[in-house]
Amino acid sequence: MALAPISIGIQTRLTAGIALVASLLVLAVGWYWTTHEEAELMAGLRQREARMAGLIERGFAGPIWNLDHVAIENLLDAVMADPEVHAIELKGLGLRGGQARRVRDNPAVGSLRREFAITYQPAADTAGTQVASAVLTFTRYLVDEQISRTRFFVVELLAVVVIGIVIASSLLVQWLVRRPVLKLGALAQRVAKGDLGAQETVERGDEIGELTMRFNAMSLKLRSAADQVQLSSAGLRASEARYRSLFENATEGVFQADADARVLSMNRTFTQMLGLGSQNPVGRRLAELTGIDRHEMQRVAAVMNEQGKIQQCQLQLRGAAGRPLWVELNAHWVEGESGQRRIEGMVSDISLRRQAEAELTRHRDHLEELVNERTAELSEAKLRAESANQAKGRFLATMSHEFRTPLNAILGFTQLMQMDAAIPAGQQAKLQLMRDSGLHLLELINDVLDMASIEAGKVSLKPASVDLRALVDMACDSVRLRAEQKGLAFWLDIDARLPTQVIADGQRLRQVLLNLLSNAVKFTDSGSVQLDARVVELDATHTRLRFEVSDTGIGMTPAQQARLFQAFEQVSDASRHLGGTGLGLSISQQLVRLMGSQILVQSTAGHGSSFVFELRLALA
Ligand SMILES: Nc1ncnc2c1ncn2[C@@H]1O[C@H](COP(=O)(O)OP(=O)(O)OP(=O)(O)O)[C@@H](O)[C@H]1O
Ligand SMILES: [Mg+2]
Image 1: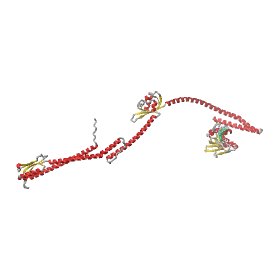
Image 2 (image 1 turned 90 degrees about the vertical axis):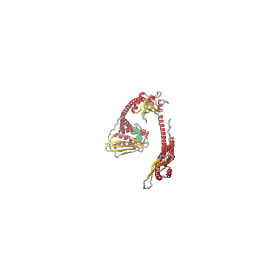
Image 3 (image 1 turned 180 degrees about the vertical axis):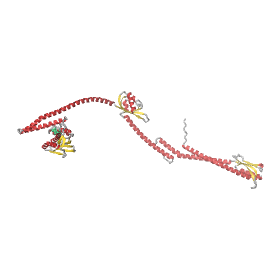
Image 4 (image 1 turned 30 degrees about the vertical axis):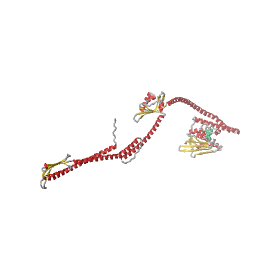
């Protein structure tokens, strides 16, 4: 049986302590006091005894010398009247029977005995004569009584002091210590029971007051700490719930395993992937759950141990029902807080992807076959097209040439016949028509031939020194007449800095300008046609020229402009009535490209057009 420790209250201990100290003090003082008093009383006793002895010596000498026995008896009685005298005994010849004595009945206590001689001296200057010897016995009885009283007083005092001190200290301790300590205890109990922040009134400015203040502060601190703990634990719970939700609802399988590959946790997706149903995977081996091939497992373990992680590792697993499934594994080692290592991993079901990849590979193989087939077909077709194109070019060139020869003969003879004065005026008009048609046909054939040559890549520029002004003038002259016939104003604006001699293929440049100018005149019914030739740059060796042919004619819509430079394209309906083949612009663009530039167009339907190109030419 365990003994309960005896609990003695602080008040009792303090009171007992103070009482003990006070008692010891009073005892020490009492002891000192009684000892001192005893010494003093004893000294007084001795003095009185000595005095009494003196008195006896002087008082008895005469009566003994004179044998006055009555006086002696009276003196003896007088001596015995002193209560401290226990006995007196005189011996001498002058005494009745040689001695006289008086003794009290009660026994002497701690007696003081003094023996002395009684000497009679009749005169001051004579020698004394011993008449008797005396033995005086004093008793300490009264002294002892006095000491006892003092001791009793000391004991009483001690009792009073002790009781007073006990009561006073008890009250003081109760007031100063016990009550506030009990209050603090109650406060501590309230705090312990959960009343965090509970406070006690500070009544005094002493240590207990200080302690109360500290207690109050501690209680407040505890409350704020508890509040914080509550807050952070609420936050922790929320974040735990978030992470759990993330973990459980992740579309990927997520797991944690210990160093022996035993499952610590596994999310729903992974258990579903493995078809575990309601089985608890925790504590089971990953190899057993996933049905992974032993060699594969060893391979994964080797990579993990070597690199600390494994990434995008494709594995074939077997679910609960032996169902095969392909997954992609990403896993790594994680050091736990306690120093234990664990594996954290993520698994994606790639069965469908693998299937799709296999399908894709099949398709790709098939596609490659198809592409190879098509490529072969296409290159064959390309070869055919190229040879057809070449054949077309050759055909056009030959045919144009073949057309031109007889046509030149027709034109020549028509001209000769026109010169014949014998031919009447009516026939002359027909001849003129023949000639115009022939010239038009020649123009057409020339265009077709040009186009064919350009497409066949057979046209090359023949740069030579050219008189630019003369060239521009010549181009203008060819169309000016037609412009005037249509009632159009014709403007030629040539930059004064235009160099006269440049290196260029003059014939081709004139052909381009002529094409643009004749289009401008052809597609303009009122207003004007203008050619601007500007110098954009000019240095010692080269010049950059800007040619612009603008008109106020029918213009074109943006859609028409988009088709503008294609061969045989006549973009507006009006142009079809105005004749032509739709080759002019196409040929011109190809030629300007050969010259290292291109023709740009700006046009607004109904308001006119502007064709611009720039050429960089060497100075001759
Ligand atoms: N200045 C212009 N204003 C309006 N339309 C134009 C102008 N220049 C060209 N076009 C349009 O562009 C088309 C193509 O011009 P291009 O010079 O190639 O052929 P064409 O003049 O019709 O025939 P060709 O020049 O072969 O005799 C023209 O049919 C016409 O519709
Ligand atoms: Mg034209």
